[in-house]
Amino acid sequence: DTGVSQDPRHKITKRGQNVTFRCDPISEHNRLYWYRQTLGQGPEFLTYFQNEAQLEKSRLLSDRFSAERPKGSFSTLEIQRTEQGDSAMYLCASTPTGGKLFFGSGTQLSVL
Amino acid sequence: ILNVEQSPQSLHVQEGDSTNFTCSFPSSNFYALHWYRWETAKSPEALFVMTLNGDEKKKGRISATLNTKEGYSYLYIKGSQPEDSATYLCAFPTDSWGKLQFGAGTQVVVTP
Image (cartoon, rainbow over all chains, first blue to last red; front, side, top):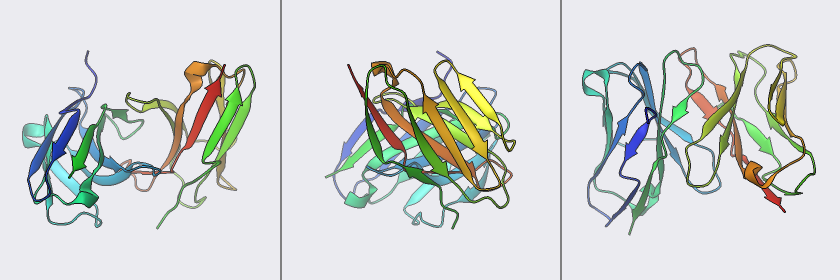
């Protein structure tokens, strides 16, 4: 399968812990996006990369969130000192040109 | 803030019936309009990317129309089947890099 893969699929953590998610995009795709989706809402933009450069980070994101894409391949999203409000589905997507997005299955985060 | 609105929020359809629902978006600075289908426990999947006013796209029993002047798109499902049950998301690029603003989605449930 050469689609976008995300790991883990599910993560349960206690409030205050740090968590890290990984996304492996389709190999020839230059652009990589992170979105967050909560119940009843559409996916909300978090950040995106063109190769290894992080182009924009949502103003809605606190400093507890950080993302990297070393060497322009896989990406990681880290949340430090998790809060219950961070509970959501975290989606990664990639695209070669900025057209249609190819999504992973997401990481469902539950903060207890 | 550019808003994408979808209605209705949810829809129950009998198998074999046809249905349609709406996405409205800002008509200024239009780049494109995306439709995605998101089935439970799967990845969101692109259905259509539409760029031209009056454009009409079709994929099997699903079709979409676009009116960029008035800022709306319709998605139609003809002869609904249980496998059409999903959340249908529309999205609007807010910049030339393809960063998408999503609507909250229309959840479609097709009952046999």
